[in-house]
Image: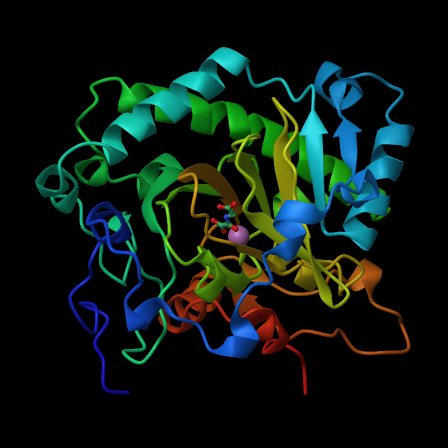
Length: 361
Ligand code: OGA
Ligand code: NI
């Protein structure tokens, strides 16, 4: 195929360096073809509050209350309508959230020579990077990121973790633990909302101790021509669910609804939750992972934290027999998560094409 997974097809230039250089026109490698450019009008003019994705108060789930039917129902509705929702009263403290933002901002603001120590490669993606996919011809996205494996413990490689600021590791680990607790609560509720046993999905994805967690800290530097590019191209997330922490002051993430792109307006203190490809497969497409993307911004830089809850790598995931009509076949061919992830990683963001490729013949 003309590339090797040991390295990138060409030298990787951090977008932060390009942005800080003071250019007024972005390099050709970032200019999307006209049909793939965002229409930025919606970002400035739309004030229609009807377009908020659902906001769900999940305190009954967090408290372990017996009265959770309403919440389960709201989750089911959101998964069917949007594949996205915001959760409030989720149990992760504002203090921890703020510390997470602070330590990672400090990391991204450290000198380029320090960040380059952690440069990543396209086999594991762990570390500091600026591209996804190894196609040399690809038009690049306007963003840098840091990617880490958090859980299970055996997948964590501390050599790849930034040593500075000194409390980054402790705070990131704590954040990972707290968000994993939340993910388990949400996965149980999603399982119940499909009339499956509440532990069904957790088991199918590797069980309490082996379900996996990775973190992608996204940094989108200011972009002088946001109308020509994207911070992150359309994609669906490959795993089970994603819990996104995003800045409530700087919009950027958009979700596809029918043929339009709808801005997500994060509520202060909320997390944005979305369904990944593995739930689409397991639920036999009763719930679908939904395409989303990030638009670039001329006025403000933006950070976001995507916590991906994934199946254990060697788990083979197929549609739950309970959710397949007895008179038809499952929609998807089973595949292990490691195999699927490798496929996604070599290709980079491709909208929904990746999960569609699992469709049974
Ligand atoms: C992602 C993602 C959205 C954002 O990292 O997969 O969709 O707002 N991020 O950064
Ligand atoms: Ni995503």
